[in-house]
Image (cartoon, rainbow, N blue to C red; front, side, top):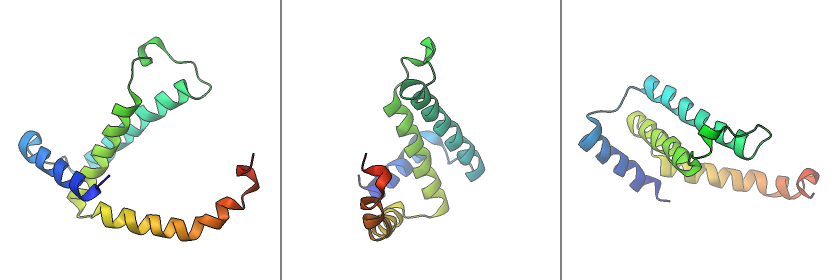
Length: 109
């Protein structure tokens, strides 16, 4: 996934269809709402809670895409280059976590 391209795509969509970005606090609230929708699906479909009839047709992929969309909006409006940030974070996690996870007895089921 090219995050830089995705950020530009979202920015173009906002300019063409959304009038303007919601403010950062509104987008943070929206992100929380979307993550909650993902959590609801996961808890009921993959967790121990029973899935309500009204939840059975919910699309996990669509809800995850909503989360990504709002994250891209927040990155755009706060001036974060998400591709650079992601690449930097992945390099850090690779260096820090490679041996840690391989040596974790809990993961060697």
